[in-house]
Length: 189
Ligand SMILES: Nc1ncnc2c1ncn2[C@@H]1O[C@H](COP(=O)(O)OP(=O)(O)OP(=O)(O)O)[C@@H](O)[C@H]1O
Ligand SMILES: [Mg+2]
Figure 1: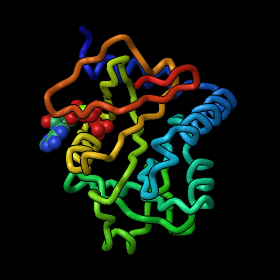
Figure 2: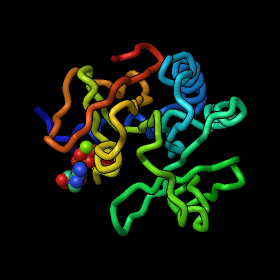
Figure 3: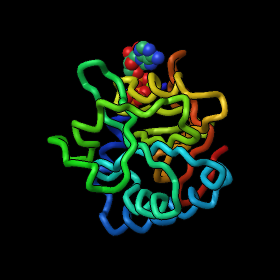
Figure 4: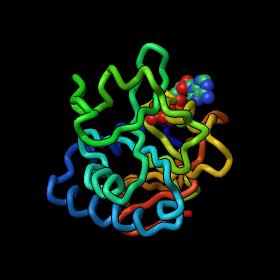
């Protein structure tokens, strides 16, 4: 089998070159499917990534979920400790653009992290997945470290374009499987 690094590069090359209109229209299909899941409907405390480059776009989801009364938690990437700090936001003014080009919670907000054990649903980004719901991310293990600490009933749902889901990807002991992967064409669960 190819290495994680090889397949990460292969799929990122495709995603980085994805046509913006295609990304937007597929993202909207994927978000509609996410909102139709029982996992979404039954969750109050929802952690969701902020999309970066051509990741499945989550901004519309965040707006809609907030207006439906959901509690929205956004990851702050603590690069020093290689750890995700979950931070509740009330609206988009609680976010700022970071130097890497994605929105993150304002610095003053990270002093009060949201308790991971209270999160009902984590909407997870990723680079490559497989049909057994294994996930390959950017390669630092941020989400593996976060998800290992979630409560048992908390679900992990990944969003991806169909071309990101392969037959099989390498998985290590520390890799946490997704509970569901939603693409514009399929729901893997
Ligand atoms: N629970 C953990 N505790 C300590 N180290 C971990 C844990 N999970 C993963 N790691 C370490 O993180 C490194 C990268 O992991 P991996 O290759 O799975 O990244 P990834 O899942 O692709 O990245 P990411 O989740 O950040 O998108 C590995 O060297 C691994 O040892
Ligand atoms: Mg991993």
